[in-house]
Length: 505
Image (cartoon, rainbow, N blue to C red; front, side, top):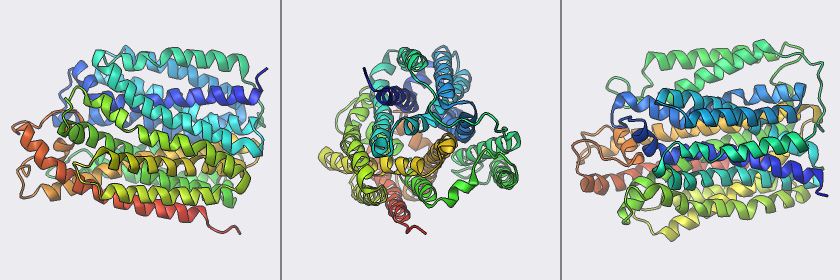
């Protein structure tokens, strides 16, 4: 008979795999989605649709993770985990049946809510089922499933989307149904559940609304306003950010005064928890935008310059990113096992250093680089991420009492998802500014950098520009601008490593 803990690990890994596939399968399929729904990606008025289709799933996931984690400590982690499968299934079917882009975005948000239930509870359920000596290994395997799903999503999107964008959603539905049935039959509550706790409704509302406003404001900075390529002067963006930060400040005051807070601020008094969360946040900001940038570069520049047609690039962009997955597959389980024995902090620090080296390698990469150069760089990125993620998750989850693992898992996942969303926005904002500067005096000086960037991403050429001229001139400028981002990410990765080895009190 299979040991129950391995049933837990395989089921939660399936949930992580499915939810992460749907994070990236849309990214690689955007050209087919826009064509299928008759949306002109070159029209600036449609840019918000592109933005929400890309980031809506991650945004809603980031907003509700802590709330779900808190509810899990009260109502049961397995119960809400299974509920997540049901929401995800319904949301995914609704996405596939969408008749227009607005419907797709709304149902994508609903799908993200289901993904949040899966993300928020997986680590806590695993921590409940595994002893300390095996916990890092188990969490490492679960994290591998999550990362593998992101790259499987890229490849699946490239293969399936040309036959009909709806199929990118239908493909995960059978596996989600299997996951729900399997979880319903086999999973059982092992965690410490306190049903007497009261729900902090005021804290939930102020946190959810505040974080939503902040993430919307940050996201809409990417939408041009007036004569500026970015929207930081847009009064709605400013108002959204001010109100968002005000509500978060009010939320902190509420949490310090209520008897059953949703966000247990006292957990940060635990050095292991605070070190794990802070290093995770900084590392996720450094790494969060990398996948999007490399996909844009491969799909819109490198592959076309090496003879691939625009129809072929989505699939091959996913294939050529596989060394990143391979690096993680090598080090994820190994670092989890070794960190169980020797401690987590050293592995987090060394992993962060390897990530920094990878970013520096990428920063000096020419636009027409040989694939071997790129493959080694992203393999190192995967190795470093594998060394960091599993020990970091183990450190965070092992440092809190059993009755708080649901909220701790939600807090950890929230910090990671918020940081990744911020990373993507910051990456794009810095890249747009750098492109605007580097376009001056070139044949592209009359093209808005935002239009150029997303034209490349969606496999089209800006109106009135020859494709050969655009590719030849844009490629070196893009890489010059991208190098700045990689230098910044290298510095952030070093900071994450330094945070990981802060001395205990």
